[in-house]
Length: 222
Image (cartoon, rainbow, N blue to C red; front, side):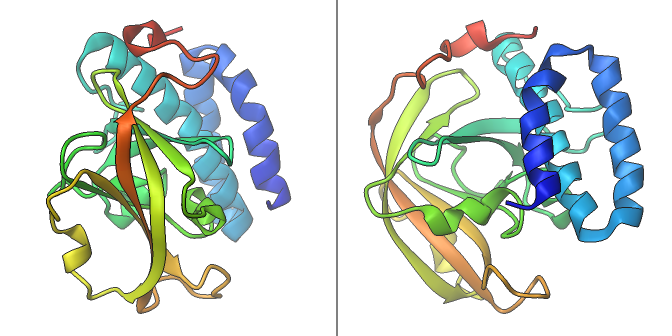
């Protein structure tokens, strides 16, 4: 993990404990710095954005309605992913445009909502949020928190490298599953190549909240 990404990840718990306005100011400052800092700044920007998005997700679950992560955002959080073996959590945003993916993994709106019946397709950048996809193995558990606060458990079934023109991966295959997509190869110098790395996971059962995390509206604003 790059140094700036590690530092931002360590800072997230502290950022959650400070006032909303201070966090927002920090995000704006970091966004400005990122335009000068190149790739390293983008790593830190992505991780700090997750802190703001996490707060918006907690408020969304508590209120029962989606809450913008910052006032001018054109996206809202729609679910939470928990990668159990990797001990990582990510909040999923609505939409998978490049602008949205700069801040977190994005849900393709034409597919099933995260945790709902059907095939939910979620994309993320290979060098930030979805870098961890290469660590997933068959049988790994992925938990999804829906917007109503309920949880579902999925098990990774396989991973494959496909051409980006493969539209069938987003189709409903008559089963409840997650399709997680990122660019391939992971170490490519340029983004947006012709290939995608796709991880598929099959719904296992309803799931309890991860240890130490209350369910549903108890995740409300702090």
